[in-house]
Length: 130
Image (tube, rainbow, N blue to C red; front, top):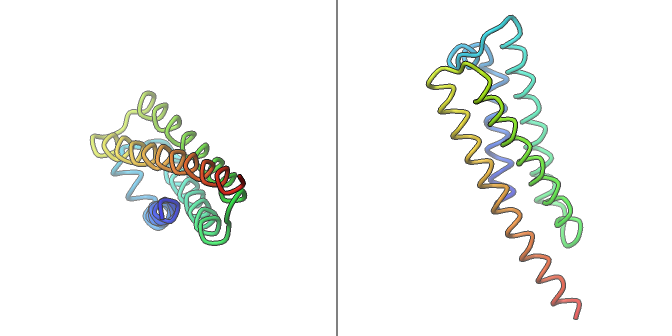
């Protein structure tokens, strides 16, 4: 269920970024000639990520799901690092700062919860094997 929630929020956020790239770039305070293109690019990446996470969550089991959860969590942690860098180095608007921090904290929460559940899964798989 956590992976599906991650997938849904990633897909939804990506869909907003793709469909409203100009508005979102302006609202967050991103500047530059390519801000709208970068917003759309990140949105497409989030849509693809959301689909991939949903496929993993609904089709994988056991060891395959455990490995996929590790990769998904690592990608989530990379998002958090990128968010910290963006907040520290960009001149975001107040809304942009809030949106970046809010999404970064949410993604960090997904990563931690997924890793915690993955650890429980390892324990259960190990006990089932004994």
